[in-house]
Image (cartoon, rainbow, N blue to C red; front, side):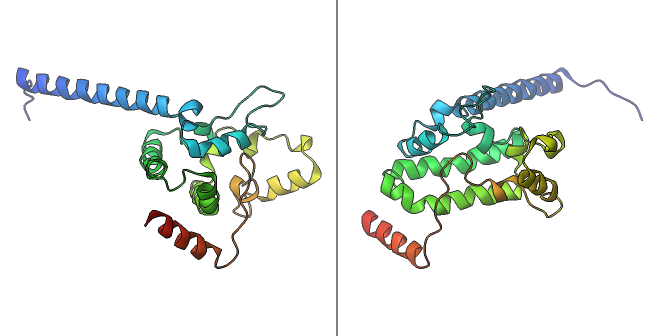
Length: 194
């Protein structure tokens, strides 16, 4: 098989594709960096309550001075999962704009559903975002109290992930609605929008 030198046209097309791809990737990462900032996340009115709750937790202020931001907990680090998370987050912006969660009452009416969506996502990824800071292998179990040591040792063996025990760690854990309460809230929302 004889190797032939690519034509100048092929080289130019390849370089243009490479350049456009690089600029697009860089632009997308710049956009992701901007939208990962906490001040961007809480710029929506509906996130103000979550932000106030978060400021009362150890993820916001602690003796070590280490802070987990909104993106640290809600946005994956790897590019493709991050891209998926950003596309899915567009629905949150949509609901803010159309007024689905634009008041404290509407937000609270949907809080259980929204929280469960986040928890399910975290379970599906084995609490991937939690593990970017917290790792069983790095835990000094001897420094934990007896109950925490016991649970952290058994959790991976029992197929448990961080969110199974720590669902109310950064935001107030919503109360599960009583049976029939969801239908009442949905009926009220459709009346409000109609």
